[in-house]
Length: 147
Image (cartoon, rainbow, N blue to C red; front, side, top):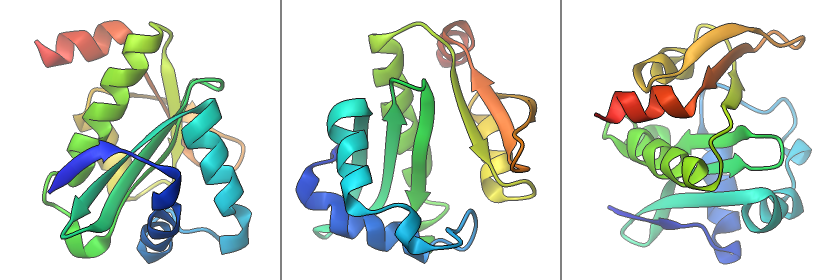
């Protein structure tokens, strides 16, 4: 497994992973076009990928402007191998090198993601109007978790 910063040339494979997931699926795949992914990884924040044999099998993207996790997805074939945890660590370490402001995210209720984030130090703080569970992570909580 190779973990590295996402490049614009990775977007097609990132989109494949995004459409393979069984939870937090898009109601309409056209809702997240390639140009949006490019904007998020090059201007709004940064992204990371995990490659196995030259194939992207997971990715994460953080949005510095909204101070939120924009994406964290792993090909179901590669689930439960630590890929999501490492993509998460890379993303959050980088985020807190840029700012000490808390970061937020939303995920569908009753999913593996909803169980994953508290294990990584996130605190559930309510729900969004769309029904997603809202989590936040502070710099202090992240640092203390790492110690």
